[in-house]
Image 1 (cartoon, helix red, strand yellow):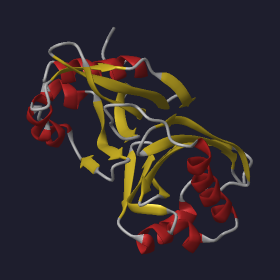
Image 2 (cartoon, one colour; image 1 turned 180 degrees about the horizontal axis):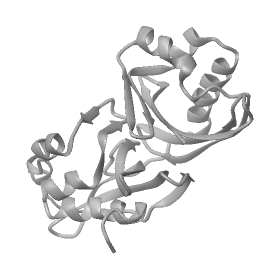
Image 3 (cartoon, one colour; image 1 turned 180 degrees about the vertical axis):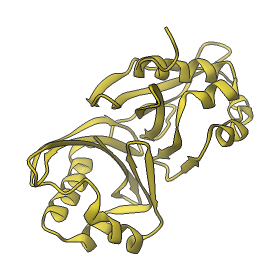
Length: 244
């Protein structure tokens, strides 16, 4: 199978290149600009393949005993002809074939120039022992954000996210550094619902959760999105969103 011909091919090549410690191949499987958002609060942004390859390093992982990472079979959550949200993740192993760390991740893949690549990664938070979080808490923060947005309360919406806040659109990554910059742009983003159809947790972990949302816009078209919500000091906030 040609790498990048399908979203799944790109997904599995991501892990093959990582195991091989092949920085150029790893960078080649991404769409750019590329972003990784973790429920720990870490955000990594790369403008180009050259920038990604230059930053690639396995030294820190190897110090933990890591020898390889295996991908989890992905599940399609939301899709269009040129963008897809895959719920997947990974498990890291040591030389004794023992699992030492795992994570649940939504991979946002986009088809740019006829090739699929990973544009964004929303990670729930790596853990040596996987632990689910309460579904209702994470759904509530996303539902509350959308309800306030529907009501036109932009200020309240800006207080339900953490910064830098990441919005992933087709071939574009928006990064908002504070409430003021997000508030100015929020009204023109494709997020305002006329009717919310579904809010459901597709992945959850000790530090956060990925929540799938379906809603109808004011034009009555159905829209879909994935939100990453994370917990800090006992309070959930939205860290990022990808729209379809």
